[in-house]
Amino acid sequence: QVQLVESGGGLVQAGGSLRLSCVASGRTFVNQAMGWIRSAPGKERSLVAVISGSGNTTFYADSVKGRFTASRDNAKKTMYLQMNNLNPDDTAVYYCAAASTDRYPFRILTSGRGFQYWGQGTQVTVSS
Image (cartoon, rainbow, N blue to C red; front, side, top):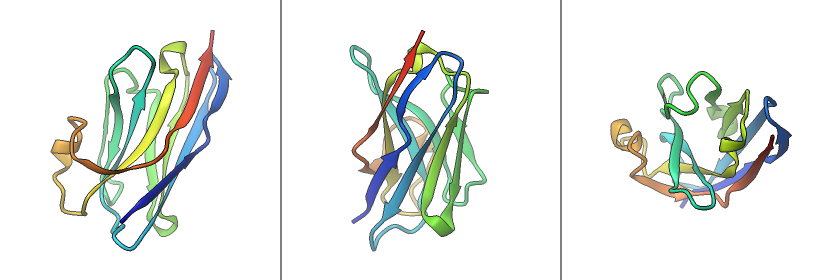
């Protein structure tokens, strides 16, 4: 099993920045690809970003390209999401998720599918 714990959410004004963190633990965490997915009231859950196990490959939703950056520190088993120039449309619960193994196809994860493990979520609220 893999446990994921997010932190770093909060309330920020439009144009501001936040950095989310996701710490992984568990016997079966083998530096598999991970992602950030967000869920806002009245909207479908949507993929924000995916990062490969090595951290060398990333994928972003069009809505966050150029503003959000995903990174990871495998020595610390931690993934990050640096969010800049936030706007009210970014208000959502942000979930950290991980693939089942380090061999799971990255391209499937970029569709938002295939994540096996999920964190409890952290709220991000952007005021106008």
